[in-house]
Length: 103
Image 1: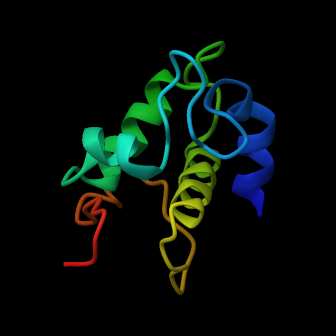
Image 2: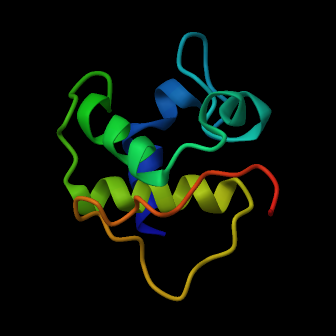
């Protein structure tokens, strides 16, 4: 829920309410997203978000806020919720690969 609220406030105007992308802002779910991120780690995506988003104020979200937005993206992408919240600490997401289909 925290991620959905943050996404609506800080991300949706560029990436769209449904995460489908708008004009030059890429999709954050679906086949266009996977074309760019398949096989990468959640850590890579998290660091990209953390250092370059939101576009009007890069780096303005805390690690916890970025983790919440990433959790929202995963939920919208159809991933099941885990037993614990995503950890935004450095290196915490290095072992989780982004996959379109369950291996």
